[in-house]
Structure formats: C-alpha cells, structure tokens
Amino acid sequence: MPSRRRATAAVTDHRTRVGQQRRERTRARILAAALEVFAERGTEAPVIDDFIRAAGIARGTFYTYFRTTAELLVAASADLEDRLMVAIEAALAGRTDPVERLATGTRLWLRRARDDRVLCGFVIRSQLRGRLVEETLVKDLRAGHRRGAFRIGTVAVARDLVVGTIREAMARMLAGPVPRAYPDQVAAAILQGLGTGGRDIRRLLAMPVPVLTGEGSAATAKGPSSPA
Amino acid sequence: MPSRRRATAAVTDHRTRVGQQRRERTRARILAAALEVFAERGTEAPVIDDFIRAAGIARGTFYTYFRTTAELLVAASADLEDRLMVAIEAALAGRTDPVERLATGTRLWLRRARDDRVLCGFVIRSQLRGRLVEETLVKDLRAGHRRGAFRIGTVAVARDLVVGTIREAMARMLAGPVPRAYPDQVAAAILQGLGTGGRDIRRLLAMPVPVLTGEGSAATAKGPSSPA
Image (tube, rainbow over all chains, first blue to last red; front, side):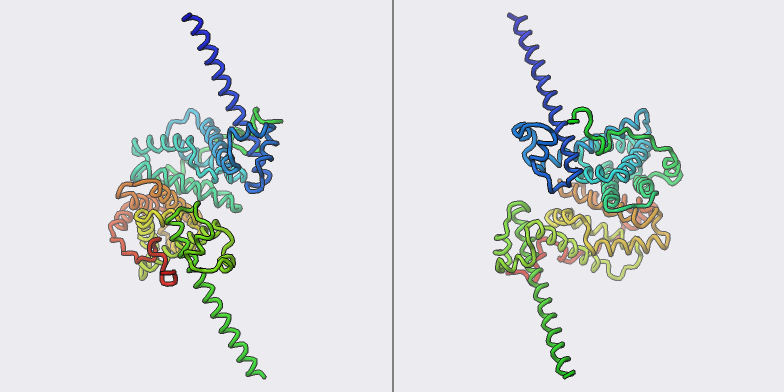
C-alpha cells in the first residue's frame, strides 16, 4: 500500500507539473500574440477576438488567463520589461562592481528604448514597476551604498532618482527624436546624482556597451512558443 | 457710419469678453466641484450626474465643457497642478538665484505632496506635464545652466532628472509613509544630480522653507467660484 500510495503521489505530481508547464506556455503564447497585436494596431483599437485569433486559442481559454484587454496590456508590458531586464542581466554577467553594473545597465536600457520605440512605449506603460527591475536595481544600489560608492541619503532615494530619471527619459525618447548623445548624458546625470565623481563617470561612459541579445526587443518577443 | 460701426464693434467686443469670462467661471466651477467629487469618491466610481449635481449646472452645459469623466479628471488634475505651481511661485517671489529657486521650490513641492495625499494623487495623474511646471522649471534650469551653476549635459537632461525624480518620489509618498527627512533627501539628490556641490547643497537645505498659501491644496481648491 505505501508503495502504491507513493506511485499515485508521483503520478499526481507529474500531472500537476505538466499542467502548470502547459498553463505557462499558453500564457506566454497569449502574451506574445498580444504584443504583436498591440504593436500593430495600437492599445485602444484591439478587442478580445483579435487576441484570440492571433494566439490561436479558444475564447474560454483566453478568459481563464485574462478578463479584459486592459489587464492583458498590463501583463504584456510587464512581461516585456522583464525580458529586457533578463537580456541586460545576461549582458552584465560576470561584472561585480555595482557602479559599473548600474552605469552599463542604464546605458543598455536607454539605448534599447531609443532604438525600439514599440518596446519603449510598452515598458513606460508597465511603469518600471516590474519585479526584476526592482530586485536587480535595488541589489546593485544597496551594494554600492554599503561600500560607499554611492553618496546619497538612502537606497530608497537612490532608487527613485534612477527609476524616475530613466522613465522620464523614455517618455522623451518616445515623444520624438533625441540627440545621439542623449542616452549617455542621462546615464551621466544619474551617476552624478548618485554621487559618482566626474572622473569615474567619464571612465564608465568610455567603456564599450555590450551587445544585447534579441530577447529585449518587442519585434523578437514572440519566441518559440508563439504561433508561426 | 464709421462711428456707428465702431460702436457696434465695441458692443461685440464687450459681449465676447463677457461671454468668455462667463465660460471660464463655469469651467472653473466644474473643475472645483470635480476635485471634491473625485477626492471624496475616488476616480472610478463617479458618473457624469455626480459632477452635474455638485457643480449645480445643467447636463447640456456640462457637455459643452467635457465629454467624459476621464477627460474631466485629466483637466481637474492639471488645474490642481497649476494651482500648486502658482502658490510656489508666489512663495518664491523676489528670489532670483536659480539654484535657490529650484532647491526651495522642490522642497515646497515635495512637502506639500507628502502632507496632502489627495493632491499628490491628482498631480501624479497629471504627469507633471502642466504648462506652468514646464515654463517655470525650465526657465530656472536654463538660467542656472547659462551661469554654470548646474553642471549637467543639457537643459533637457536636467529637466528629465528633476521631473522624473520628483514624480517617482510622489509615487512613493502616495503609496505609504516615508521618513520625515525623505523630501529633503530627494531634493539633495536632485541638486547633486544637477552638479551642485556638497557645501552648497547643505547651505540650501538649511534655509527655512517659506509658507505656502492654501491655493496649492486640494482641500481648499474650491475657491470663490465653487458652489457653497
């Protein structure tokens, strides 16, 4: 009996796991389709049917994941913001200096936002309130604050300066063209606000910016689980 | 004939002017009533009838000014932001040093936002995109940049740092309580970001903050043209 019970439990575990993986795949598929629909037709025009058609799923299936297009838009935007953060994290792999990570991460983020206005619009919409941004950014700010690299009141104030300035810069880049130097000027202003000295800022901005893989782009956001 | 034509023109001018003044009064009356309704019942629940009743106007009159509650909310928020800016301008009257104006104006703005959460919520909603904020802030930033007081790439970058950081700080203060020192810490971070030196920052933050008159408060926003 005990062994049979164990076997039953194992089968149940397996089923639960498979079910959860399937739900995650379906959710990712809907989000990927949603990004394409929103990017193509704007955020006001599309109706639920458009997303159902693009994702190739049944109406009932859709409603088990999202109730309104507004809810879907928020989720798709947050998902894209998380993807961008994952891509930046990958590009920063191996770098441990929190000031360098912040400087290079900010430069990567702002360049991608400048070069991909669709992505920029989505990420502004998610308010830069994604879990990953908070975790990664605050970790670096805390590490820099602890070792005295950031001379600023508290980590909370540092976070508000970084997130607020980036968000406003994205709004500007979404509204129209900016000078070529603008993203790095914004990164320099943020570093100065955190208390980084002029010589360090120049050194950090002279560093080459690593290449981002496509995951951070709205155009390539569909990934393998999206309908062909 | 010419004199009669002039008289007719004068009457027309007078009528136009009176008509415009009346329209402005009615619009202000609707906005003041709207702020009270939104502040009391939230931004989602109220319907057009609530605003019509609070303003004491006819339905047809309402629709010549605003088509939707969303449109009214945007206008009421922008109006409140403008009032706050007017109150801060009045408190800064006579001060000409752009760095001092920026430091004291930022401290006033953040304190008022901390002490009046209703106002804070409205002003965040208007995105700090009001005409008055842009005009006043950019004028001071330009003056400071010209005389070398702000060491930052461009006036546009300086503006994005100031507006973005203030906006994010307001979002934090709206979400929950902050330490007593938070508004001044944010002001210090902004000044540091603009390139103000540590000694100057300490001097500016040691200055007394002038008193704001009631105009910047949501609670006193109704003014004389609102229904009793």
